[in-house]
Image 1: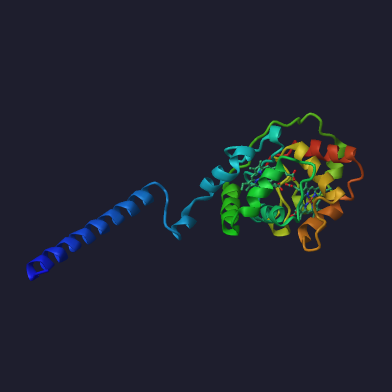
Image 2: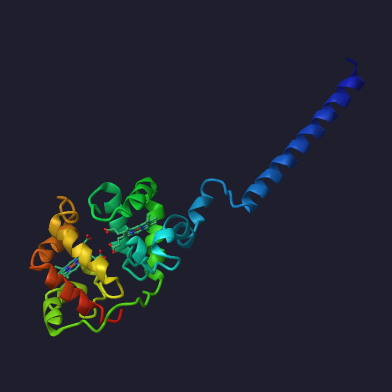
Length: 226
Ligand code: HEC
Ligand code: HEC
């Protein structure tokens, strides 16, 4: 190979390198535009995006719940409470034995990064609680009296109290609330030694003497505005 030939070769490889660099830049641009962002940028996926992909099919586009799937309202619930429940499902501290639909969710939550769960909880708590169809005519004085034992933590309007770890009970489906009182009583919730909040509520659920009393409380809750 003479000097002239070597020069041509080097120039050629320089051109090839430049072409490769341009191609790489184009690939990165295309990837970013199509939403495939490099690691690090993934944290920018919003709570709304994560919710829509993983949760909306059961809990509704705006977190309004879905009676047919036995999925409760999530919109407007407390952030810390939501995050804790997601963690409890994932770790097995909360079971949903009587609700087969929940198995699909528990699988998703087991696989989900804690940081993503936090972002979703924050998003959901920022939404307004929905106004759902409830039978308000069934409320009774007896139900109101029974609920008075719950006010210290859940609030006179059932609005919840984040500082006490107590969730909102108003603007929630009655069948769901009733089911959860049972779940605390039968040990599907509040059984785990480390579940401090769940154990507090289990003690309270045990003071609800019968299914009839639980139903009366729920009928009263239906009249409370969030
Ligand atoms: C396959 C359907 C399904 C999917 C998908 C699903 N869920 Fe659920 N979710 C349920 C059901 C059913 C329950 C009620 C469980 C029970 O009865 O204890 C529930 C309960 C919950 C609760 C408890 C609410 C409360 O008031 O204690 C939270 C929080 C929750 N889901 C969050 C989520 C989030 C966040 C996602 C997405 C990452 C999600 N779920 C995906 C079906 C689903
Ligand atoms: C000492 C405070 C306290 C009192 C009083 C109390 N609760 Fe609770 N309740 C809690 C806490 C804390 C939680 C959340 C438990 C957890 O994180 O799993 C809870 C959760 C619940 C839930 C689950 C809601 C959901 O979205 O899944 C229901 C239903 C409930 N309480 C009903 C009642 C009723 C009915 C009464 C009155 C008979 C009552 N509570 C009294 C503290 C209390």
